[in-house]
Image (tube, rainbow, N blue to C red; front, top):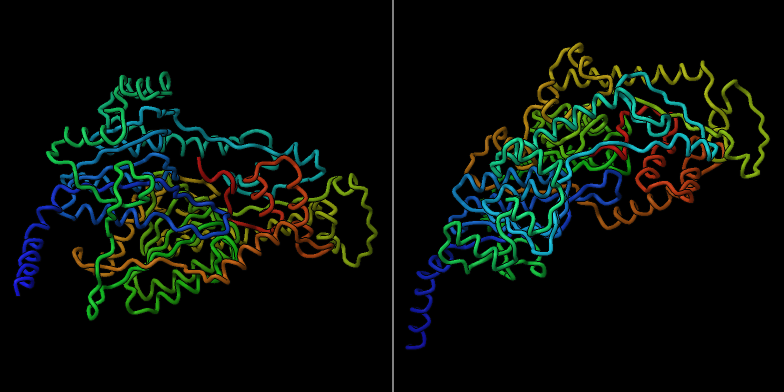
Length: 578
């Protein structure tokens, strides 16, 4: 009996004392993993939704007083960093504190760190605040040396996706459109840093243009960071911000690399009542080139979107698009699935790094489109490329004997590539196809965005836009990130702000699907046939791997060779980011 009373009173004491012990808790957000998208990568990388959810819960958690933002070893794309910064701004707006810890950082990662009240830098770290640059490499002369000819099937001023292979300098159109994009994102970062660190315009210009490279000691002297050190320096920074007791830490991320050396996990998933399951919002990722089987895998992804539209518990769909375009068929498969789903429930598109050309096509029927300031979007246009054998086969000592019936019967015939360039009358047929597809693209944008045809044409011709310029042009509805898109979807679905929801991520490929996709990528590098519809493009791409071309360029070239001559709404695959 006495033992039972002892356990009873001990339990009551713990229930009373637990809230006291849980006060003044600090969350270490350990972002040691990279959150990036490879636009043609085989795996469907899911972004950092769990990180955003942890920040959102900590914002509403009365026990969490502040966040230690561990950016040591962190790497991610520019729009992801912007979204994390926006989430942490909301956290600070709730009256809570943030201390950022950095070791090595470029301008973008440092800009994320400046969301913090204090920045602590590892004593052995460095900062490279170099500004932004944009450019591309040109392989016209490289292909000439390999005996490969290229004809650019281009009929719109800004549709420059083939210039990598047909020019040796930047075109005026690219200097104009990408120069504007570069101006937009640099101005945004400039304003952000000046506000966050109380810099004058002269301070910013000196730091970027004169100082730019900092050790920990020089960064502290220049006021770029606030303290040097590791765990102890972070604790001192928290105390400086008003924290009397800095002992209790919980962790979101990898315990092995925790700067605060804590293993107490911060749980972001609340328990779900058995008989009162909350409504769900489906987050669907469309990552990669618009392709039927690879990239976004439009055939299966469109089916997933349609199935989600029919599920009663799913109240809204958020479609995260990271795509430079590619196949119009694949883009339209997804666009039509979005149109179908919109009739059933709200569909909100969140644009990541690039949602342009075919990536924009896929988005046009959504209820609402959200883009970050760093998103590259628009590029409403269509282009084609014609690669042909201009001496490559002869250099290999290969000869061919052909017979044909029909003036263009040999058009797709060749060992590695088609044997010849297009005749003028043949190019005219390709031009008609491209113009037809462009008209369809324009009409779909006009319908989806409730715009006049003339208004769409005024911002089309393949021109790219930053998120802000796309907003001004009427191509997107608001500036924000993935979490903003989820909030908009919640509101459109009529879910009250305080009501708990479930976020379900899709697609969920089976093990068999993942194996088949990997095999498909492996096969793509070695396959090829004589005289087939593929014109040996796959074999040519495999052969090119023996030359010293950069991997992204080989990836881009392989994609185009496999679709030689096809009209495509596409960006330069290797140049979608800056």
